[in-house]
Length: 261
Image (cartoon, rainbow, N blue to C red; front, side, top):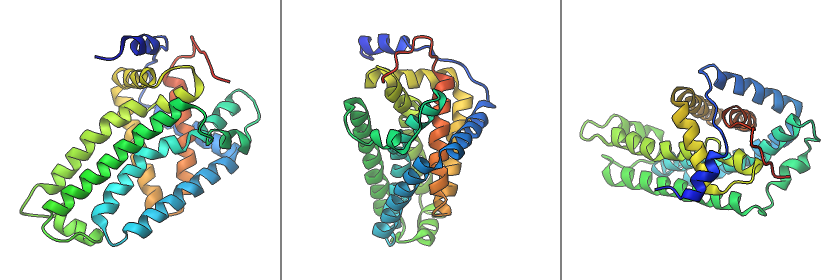
């Protein structure tokens, strides 16, 4: 059972219902924020693109590892983009939305964000190891590149490996998504514990299953497009980060706002 204090804390933050059209509006508002202050977004996008490049360089001949690593990368991206939530918050409050505002969140002074980042890291690492173990132990042959992955995993006639890989990935990703869809901007913006933020995030998902399923699909599709185009991540990462701030602002009421300065 959830900790009663955390449940109490979560219930202080009312959850709103949104419509299926709202995810598209979040993207539009996120793009507007990015265009208004492109510098912080491009820096975050560049850093994450370089990190993706390192993953590719390390695992380019081990696609069994790369497939899981990039999935883990998607799990970790929201915490890496915390600075851009701060920029969107500053724009919303008509405060200076400078590079310093974004970079200040990179200083690990808030133990709640550090703890949540460690939890996401553990989830991402767990999936990378699980994915690698499944593919290396059950694939029909060695999986070194995308062609091998298609031949020995996706099109295998002798096993249900691809279906099992997708099902297990979905089973692991769904609770992580539900736990984090508004948690990070909520932790940045308000005085609430990690478990309280996670419970609030779950309440948002349970109150809005269809819109947040669409939001998840849009995040995956656009992030995947950014990865396929390489440096497209430099645009996609800040765009989605700013949009995620607006998702949080629409989903969690500010009627009892106790913002952190």
